[in-house]
Length: 616
Figure 1 (cartoon, rainbow, N blue to C red):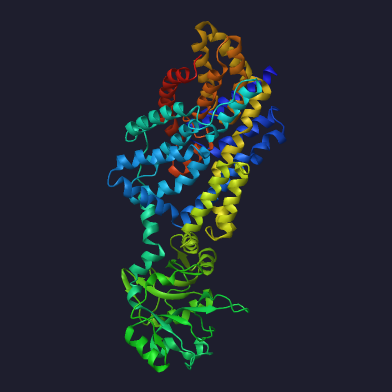
Figure 2 (figure 1 turned 120 degrees about the horizontal axis):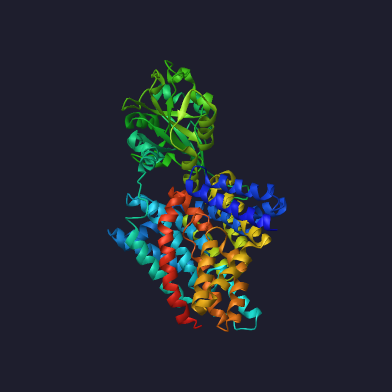
């Protein structure tokens, strides 16, 4: 047992050093630590892999999907815009307001849930004000931890110590009994983070990528290629002679120098209920039907000639270019590769539509945009082609051809287009999930999974593939692989030995000395194992210490809960820290630099505050 105890602390120490060196990815370090515990016989495989079935890990994965729905639908941007409106032009006011909102939300929701829901909003705000998300995300996670002291249900640690009191014949904690301590903690945290935000927090602006993505968004591409001035909607009357004909028969590109990009039509089911609008890419085999809306690219004079020849109806003088982007269809820019087989061939010879089921609707040739008579244009190396068609076909083109390279992230844009207009639905799902968690209708993990599944079913998240792609697997593996460390410490008796040693060592300093020792030891271990596991392990030690010294057990137990919640110094201290680590591009040392001084400050404050509200 002594050998296993020694090995456990050696493995924990090496893990901490590797985390701090930042040479290896954190999830790889966590996996190496897990393997070491198994290979040394400290844990068996069942114990080692228990973390991957832990409800916290499942909940974390679900929260990533819920966050994706909030971001995809534009709800995050709407919330961000609302915050910006209240804060005005003051970044200081925005910073404080954001932390206050996080604290209020976190009082009734888990810190992990609060952070996962707020990350897309914070990233959207940072982008809007041309600032770095890294300046806001660590404060976001820290404030969520502070909010765990505001109500009884805000943290599992609070519930554990309350139940411990009940089990030993004492009154349970009231819902708001620890709120005064929480308020003081929140104020302390806000003041500290406000003062160090420009000194200790990383503020590396990496906007080049976001600007590039913005430039290559479908909306911006439509502007760059000036599609708005050359896109028209034409309605097909019931008696038009083109009804029932294939587009190939009409030879529109040859006779009118026009290109029909997509067809929008309303269809009803067999029971003739509410009509549903369908959109499809126009192709040679597309058959024109009555009441179809044809989206046509070309000059207005040619469009008018086409309309007059076939007794059609020009809906408006000019259509918005963003109408080319929908749930089914989109646009993207592609570059010809140096050895592309398309070079020196005309667009007509290439047969791009037949080959890839996509339309070429524009050519960017060294900054000059070619939009007319493109079928006769001979492609050159360096040309950028604007293509239009089904999102699935664009994604397929990005994966399966060596002739062109798709620029940007069509999969991301497809997901955004699919979720467009569904912000109210995403908001309703988020509210439902929060209510289910606050009133404990189901376990928290089930409530989160309900929210995640609803996001997918309602189309706020495009599909299961999109949902899986939004899960940050590095964070998932990191948390799951580190959870068994608590099992190893408990199994080898390391936690108990250290805890009892602190009590014996500091007993001569009186109740305050033991209180400080328990707080400190709980704080140290909560940086590497979950606050729930730390509270479970330290609660009996704190209670026994209180009884042996004839002091109020509630004081010692509250100190354990408060200290366990104050997980600031490492990215593995809580799932919320792991969440923001990747989103903010942080290093292990960023948490140490910002978190350690905060840990010390909060401990000093709490050593005064806890005995004040829970007298020894």
